[in-house]
Length: 321
Image: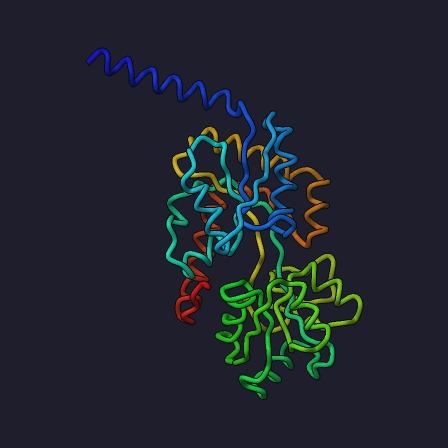
């Protein structure tokens, strides 16, 4: 019995000592998408700044495939020692749970670290559309059932699921046109090959300023500083049609609490940096308020997003490709 107690005590002491000295070597942040996209760029912005707080580099590693499933699964199976993290988004940590049969549990196989930043979408239309505000646009859609076209970034994307939500709220019906990315979809909107789309703010604002598209509302509770003339959906008459593209960080489940606390502090310190905030602003993102940067806040936020979007995805019978 004494030997067993001694062995258990050694394990506990060793674990505590390891946690107290954490980190002793570089940390990997898995981005489950190719390099160059918004998730990759956002992850790198935070990772670069975290090294000042942690005393070790945070290395971003791209692991694309399966709409993020491959990279997220790698982190779900990693040792819960604080050395493997994942930068997740709405697709990976909300929608995929309803779109696919996953090899992990989105809510139980990860420990939340922190929300990082997010950005809303614009309800954007081709500039030659006869409507001049959101009410007119919805009326136009109702006069043209199943003939109007909406660009999306593929099946199950925020634009697709958000479009279904829009249909549910407004009683409209239109065709979804999938694209391989936001850039080609925006090109077709500017060229009037499609009628409208939910455009990520950073992409849409540039074209709005050039007069190439119209924007009837922003899918958020507050107006964008970069587009103050565009009303919120509440102001435009479509209350609570909120949709955002956000980034957050998770670790594998059972990661020790003190390591989670250390990682969260490093993220919060990074997000307090004005240069970091400016870099996110250039991407069309705003850093979440400090009270929403805690692990608890991320857990509550993810739960609320799942409860909102899973029923919409399942009711529409949307399946991942």
